[in-house]
Image 1 (spheres, rainbow, N blue to C red):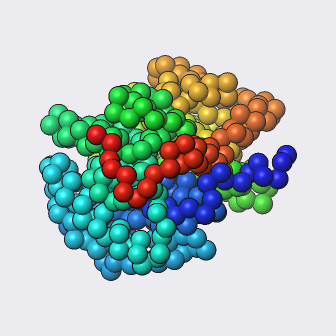
Image 2: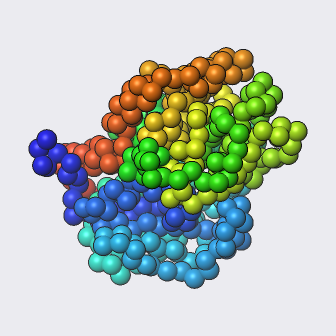
Image 3: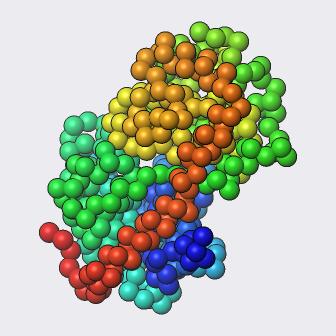
Length: 407
């Protein structure tokens, strides 16, 4: 292979990225992408901005203490984390005007960060549906909006959903180019910005591939359970867990151990499994321990209900399961259908049980097929893909810091 093939096409650029969460709390598309971009560019990751009460509630939701003090901290050779002061207005989930005002304030704060670090004509990147104002008011060399989830699916009512869709459209129009992690997310947004590029999710093989190593020890929390272990790795939330399906799976095979590893998010009542003694919720674990938990699973599952979240989004866990060489059974969501050659897909509860039974009898050579199928889907490859798209956009139409927003 050519030595330059793995080089990023975008190099020596300055990138300011609006993070969806406090750095290190979750490993998201944005997290992996910015880590990759920082190999050849300077990156400032901006932690969530808003009102103090709002940020405190989010911290409680994520089961962590909120850091109070604003900070600009260098955590890598080319990587900084910025925690802005909590001076935003509350009520972003109720009023679109609040998001717009907060966006103006954040744009002002980011200009100060730019001056402090001496950033040269930076690229501004946002995965936040309500970031249209900051995209419009921060003078950037290139403005990128990336849609990674259908956020409006989480709206409490029709009014809030309409507001969220309107704000997302504003962010899309304010950007010079748009990334989407699936075709399903991209298609309805093309009307707002035709410069749309679909780049799927991926996995970190250097991390999840450790599930294949003999020296990786399975944690006692799984090792002590009766075999086989049917596993789920990731957040346990009401949008991605089909409770009836999991209960049916557990009751059909009470001798199986069904484990769910990850945060039990607000809105999910774990008591629904109280009478299923073979369902085990193991709670949040350190990211570095995920491969060990994955190694202890005999079959991995995506028991997704079919809703706006799962029918439009991608699934990081699918790529991570496959990086660990594990058989995968999923409901019929687009993420699974794209890798149908190595994923068993079930259309109903009975078929799901049958598919797991079949997966437990997979021959050893099937693992090689799974590893081959997931090999192109690394975060390194995705970052190179995005870098090439950005480089082409910059070369095709160089933008000055005074370039106005798209209307």
